[in-house]
Length: 306
Ligand code: UDP
Ligand code: MG
Image 1 (cartoon, rainbow, N blue to C red):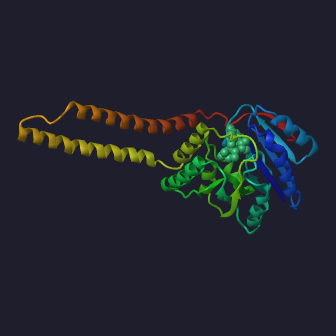
Image 2 (image 1 turned 90 degrees about the vertical axis):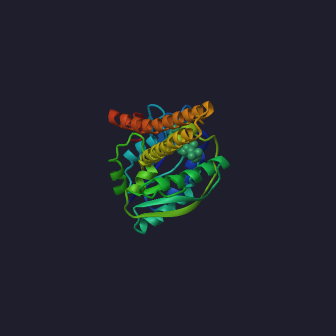
Image 3 (image 1 turned 180 degrees about the horizontal axis):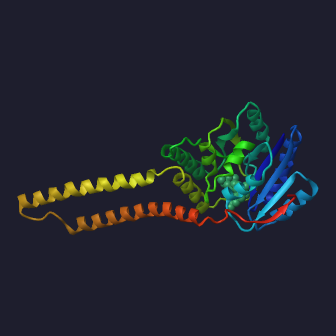
């Protein structure tokens, strides 16, 4: 049996030594062959040379360097594509996902589960991030047609079969935690207390986080489009009833009750709603467009020990 660990890293030079030390200790204690695949998402710090040093001394270490920064989900996809283990575990490179949880994931796999999630029982992030994550996962679950486990990130184990099926998905903006949940199989969850980042600053910028959230919603539901439809219908009915009311009133009182303020606010209100609706439709169209271009999802610049 072989175990693969896949870790996307982007400017994580301060974390790599500690991560390698703790992960090696865990892997050495396990009775499996193992490989650690680092995917260097075009870091601009010394991540690349640190990985080379690791790889020179330890044949279990493999590294991919992408040709530019493709983002966490794509970097993870690139690593999964080349993982060869019977069990494949993905985790972050900042020690928020503790290496010591790995044996707990494997224990569930040995009980017969194909997918094992590590759910964050507690997390040590900023208050804003905690609140945003709490709201996002509940909203996503409310909207999505399939259940997507709450408070589960990309720290999980997959069997080789699941991984091979996942490789058939060709989404340009994959929301991996949703796709894996969508796949079915036998899924289990273990709980752990997520640590705070060991060193360095978060590599998920606000823009990347929002994009991830939008990808999550857009790839699992068309409900925003239905919401636009219902909002349009409701406004039409209000407008119609209001219009009839105004005509009747002006006949009874023989004067117009329509003020310029009323008209102006109606224009702003409707214009806002229309642009908002167009924006939502536009995002769906942008996703179709990028999917239909069929570009490769990532480009590898360098392979080490592969
Ligand atoms: N990451 C990446 N590419 C990016 C951004 C992040 O490979 O463009 C990696 C990062 O190095 C880390 C993981 O994705 O290993 C999670 O990122 P981070 O810890 O910043 O996210 P957070 O835990 O704050 O959600
Ligand atoms: Mg992190």
